[in-house]
Image (cartoon, rainbow, N blue to C red; front, side, top):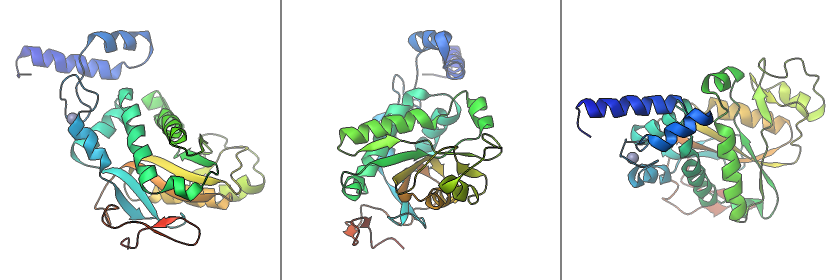
Length: 267
Ligand SMILES: [Zn+2]
């Protein structure tokens, strides 16, 4: 598309389309207006092959409290991958959800989730968003993502179930009387707490977030889940800011006594 008035119109129209993604009006816009790749604006694609490939370059970071010892991300948080994640997260580009779920499922299988759970049920726990963020975005963007991820994992023989057990303190369930594991969990993890009535005692868990920057949110979530008696296998994200500590493809995973994969090249 050249930089003439036609391009300007299309850009304006696409911006309008991105703002209006819900309801009947959104459906009309989706039908009549063109879209570009969420990562690079290539016409008529949700995510072009090149941008999609950037979500198949796993990264990892040391993460205490998880069985595998590391958290992983599908992509580096930069360039087209960053653009695509932001289009999906903050600009309502929900058409990215299926491809992002696919990338997360591939990563989960790559780091050995199927072998680790060995037929047991694994809870897929999304990191919580504040109700303010949910209002601003008009949706909790993580929920359809983890639902689709769980379905893909089940199709791959992993007994996965979505369990949105975490929430933000002071935003929801503020005055809820917590008991047992929920109460213990509620005392750690800063503003992230266990949802009312949630019970993760003895459950296998995989955490899922959109973007990992310092890893602080993941650590809080791992702390809360661990205090609630969950066994957190690992934490996955779509994109990771900063440098990867290693490339998971460099060396094959080795097995510890409990059957969980550990890559010795991880620091
Ligand atoms: Zn692209």
